[in-house]
Image 1 (cartoon, helix red, strand yellow):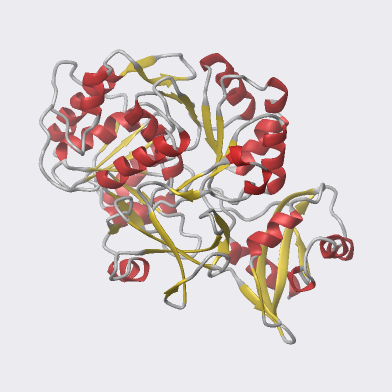
Image 2 (cartoon, rainbow, N blue to C red; image 1 turned 30 degrees about the vertical axis):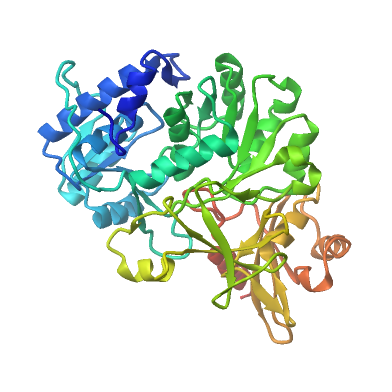
Length: 492
């Protein structure tokens, strides 16, 4: 009998012989019956190792089937899966692990040494994912309780990382929303190269497709050429990636190969430049720009790329099971006005782990989650994200949204990366600073002249900082505080 915390059991009973997981490197396939059995065996082993209700079970590994097996194993014990980022430095991982206090740390061979050091620092047991699991020993009972399905740490671009507790209610509601929004079918196959320690890798397509009964093709990490080969060999139908990855896929020949079985490109994790959307649609692909966050969704909108070019750059209408509004100064705003995106409903996190102050800042008394993102809504309900509330700056009395300026500057053929922030100015209050990665580098005056042809004067960056690479955090997002620091350092 399946439960809301373990719908894998129901899926395995309904479609036991359908393929759930495929290892792209080896071609090994796991059926839904096999995935259910593996979860039951892991649950038995975790219980034998002392994992109890509400414990956190940490895992440090590249993308592999055991992440999903452990997720459903934890569900049976009313425990919580804690995927750790292998992109973080050991000191950063130690901060997160000290905060989360897992009962156990599992690891693959690649990160055995790092896991061992982390276990020693925390005083917790560590075990290899390759440790033998008794084939006939199963834990099939579902323990009562409401522990989070997973705990994912936010990237911490603005401060100390926080552990978002994602309940099974959120995971399942997101699966329903994703199925409806992106027409998931049992014959769909998604390529999972986004890391499985992020909600993008877990919840944007992979887990929703398992809920639907499709197949998840796993690759350890992203490589554009390998991804194209895997798409062809496994007849992948849907792909989720960040814009930079899609740029690399197109440069590697995606538009030349144009596989007919590839039905959807879903861009997320960062604003999708209009140039990329134009390139995808011009090549005959269906591309949707997603919007979501670890704390909500992550699939909150339903894109409508078939409605034509005027939809490019937008994130679509609110999903069926998502209550979304825009607010400014405590009041809801109407069509055309800029407001902060707030979200309410069953697809919200339970809160940040042991962070009551952060919870009060993010979740208000009426149940709205405040995203800090700014957007507009058209008369027909289509949302367009314009930037972060904390990133917006005022120059000479005019609001400037860095995402809009960045989108315009990315149109320059020599620019490969750009980040815009506001910096203090004695005359205008604040002015724009653009950190730019270009090949070849252009002079500042020439770039500003080019920008003036496309942007209002108050939006044109006053300063340009030429960099070899933008400062990124572990999830690949630009750390804008570091951009401002580099500028201050350059000015002396």
